[in-house]
Image (cartoon, rainbow, N blue to C red; front, side, top):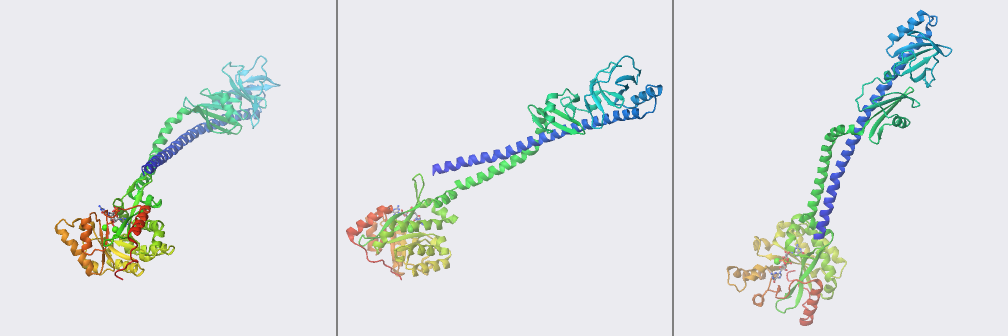
Length: 530
Ligand code: C2E
Ligand code: CA
Ligand code: CA
């Protein structure tokens, strides 16, 4: 029992722990995922912004180039130079416009060009036909490196940062490339190799200590990167939302586990398991004929044998079993026990009987009769050899009791009123009940020879039983003095430590055999009141 309890406790603790950890882990993981996804969406938006910005710059510069190409002014004429200047001023992205002839720079928005400046090597061509040279050193102004865009015989210079002119927090870096991964420009010093690596997958995610989002559109790509640590502040927010839900579910699961384990560990739970595992067995206390000492039968007394070997007395579990309605299942196991323990002995000695205690529930529903007759049918035991003992508590529903007892007696069983005199019901009340015997309670037998007020009651009970035509069984006979008193007053049978304590089935069979050897058998099964 102890081992069983600790197994239940260990299992419950385990279940509760797992049951509590799982929702917390799920919520933690969900918070982490949500935080990352939200952060990645922010990076994605920044990437989209950057690409839109770059497209705008390209389109702006291209328009200046198209306008220059469309101009009818003689090349490098004052009108041509004036148009170059106007467009340079009016186009925010464009810093300088130049005109090439035969691969040589002839004039720019600054004026005519001296020297021999050739067209720079083209890095790539945009989908709409603009040749792009990245990081060109402007020949005329000697300013910082520029991006040169070339269409027809004109080119424009654009400050690279124009392409990535978006607002970003300092720890978010951006790399803007063309579709082949050539860096157009970056912001907040991006790791270009890192960006190229992830451009190919066009995915968002985490790599090492960085998280990144990639965006590609119209021949441009952006990779936006920030340290994973930035997700932590967002994670706190998500946890604040989801963790309470996780805690609630965890508490709920723990509550359920506690409820069921407490139920399982409760006396009722123990009893249910005991019944399920068929831990109930029967001991037999001999009943002897007082006049001869012949063993005429036994009372079946249930015992609950725990796996530890402890034998539990019925007083400790019968009241609970009656309260919870589990008693009928115990009655079943007692009947099974009697049949398997004493089936053969009862077949060999037809004068022998076994008295089975039945509960109020059994009597009220009468179900025990159907159960017993079904079980006895498969054996050689006669109905007359099975007696029933019912206490006054069983007669609360007197009409149902009358029907049950009547059916039992019609089937051949004898019925005895147990613990007679200890309850509240008057004899008149019981008088109408069909029965065969009275069991005189131990408390009355105890008074014999003590000269107390109740001792007078004992002889009264015996007299009343005689008048009602009932035979009597005295319980708890411990002394020879009690036995001879009972004998003298005509009590038929006795049961008690004077004759024997309750015995195991094997010991009872030996006790019965010894009695047969010494006194011979009793008369065939008696039924005094038929
Ligand atoms: P009960 O039917 O009055 O059973 C007699 C009780 O008195 C038994 O206790 C028995 O061991 C005890 N006893 C017998 N002779 C002596 C004696 O000389 N001196 C003393 N001091 N005690 C004696 P037990 O076995 O502990 O049973 C207790 C009660 O449990 C029974 O009282 C009965 O009401 C109930 N019970 C036992 N088995 C069953 C069962 O199978 N079904 C139901 N419903 N109740 C049962
Ligand atoms: Ca009894
Ligand atoms: Ca009794």
